[in-house]
Length: 92
Image 1 (cartoon, rainbow, N blue to C red):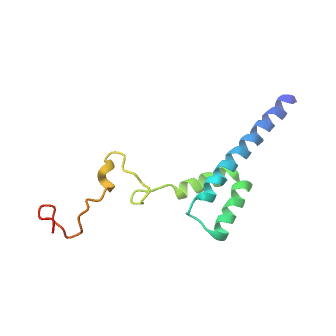
Image 2: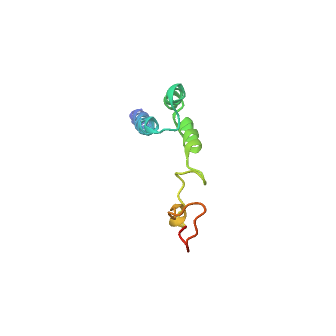
Image 3: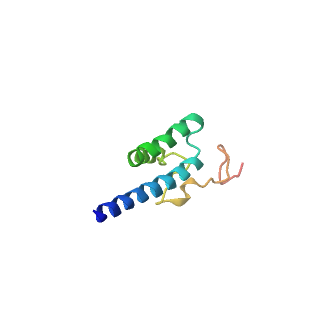
């Protein structure tokens, strides 16, 4: 019986820590604002693991976004300093 209470207490502590950490990260994010952010925060606490998984998959960086980093070629996102019509050889 005591083992069951300890297991339940451990699961509750894990739930609180996991949900609180993700809630703090979510509040700082700029993906959602206003009422939608409030709705997601409520859902994080009501349906914690499933809703956090859904939000993580929706808000993760995708290729082509400014947060996606090309690990194989880190210089691919660095600008050359040249304008769109400038030639590197002439500089004009």
